[in-house]
Image (cartoon, rainbow, N blue to C red; front, side, top):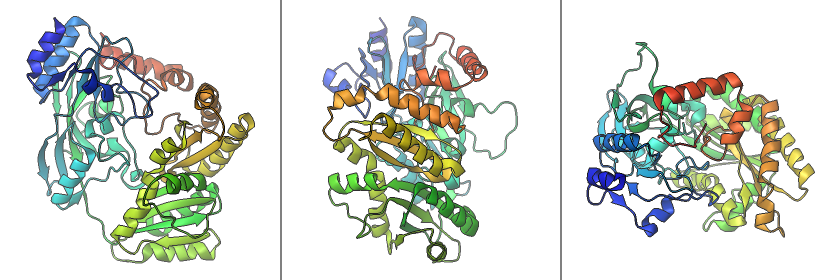
Length: 462
């Protein structure tokens, strides 16, 4: 029997069938998707993962890998049929090695992102991937969804931060690709197949990650601007003046900040006046401590900005970042919401947001748009909050209609329906509509070649 075989593989403490233990692993963060499973297994090393995969392959049973379960597209939730095994990678949580001289470290998939950041810091280096969920998300999940976060503008998405991978394949074999090489053109770049594949092609069990030097003269500022389009102009000026010194450039709508101030204890407004839009900027300069301030003064002189606050110390910078990182939590407390993670060319972000808000209001005049995102990489989170006085369930019934409007608009801008959250279950049907037949055919051929029995995270992505 498969269940007994799995129990024997992981041993005592490595499995659970307790409904109370399983419950938080069977619902995604927004509470929209719910799954079932008869057992969750938590292997302690790659060999056990491989043995679990072999057992599931022999029985033809689907296997759903799960990290911190912080995803927003239900990519780590088993089906409601209850016939899939849930694989928790939480016990693969060892930092195997750190090399300050080589600017790299090897982390197992279950390491929290914050744990990886701390290990890098202890070596006098930084691991720049940074998300609001970094205290609970796991590096394996980050890589499986090609997570973006706030520092993409300077360092790229998760796939840019990977030097090598260890992956368990669908037949239970282990590919040891944990190289720390910066240059390697010997054959296909296999690691990139598994990054962003959401566990459908192989299960990432460890990664060699790229570290960077610590940066000097880091300054954080919250800047008020008149429109979303003004953010693009300001970013252009900053990039011209500071080049690669811009770590983060986050756009925040007035309503998003209002929700945070209303629901998050201890949050404080950065200005006495409410402005239409804000950008949260983090920048550094190797030798000039006031470089960001100098450029912001120039922007103010050109009437590109309305006001600005520059953090005087790390505590004030943390307060400003807390406002940005609390938006999703605050919106959840405000009521039901429909979330859309899309991307368009950077230069079109302002025009796109205006067009999106107009399109939604034509369908629902009292819709409360909550837009925020990473302007530097064209990633916009276009969320729609439940209008006051409307019943949540009735509002959520328009999920499909709103998604269609926004995804059609995104396509008209040559954008993507998923910038950093992945496809999972939530966007699987849309992927088939917004990607070309040639692209879809290539994806299916890769899936069939690497997972011919479709046991790895079935029902996700394709």
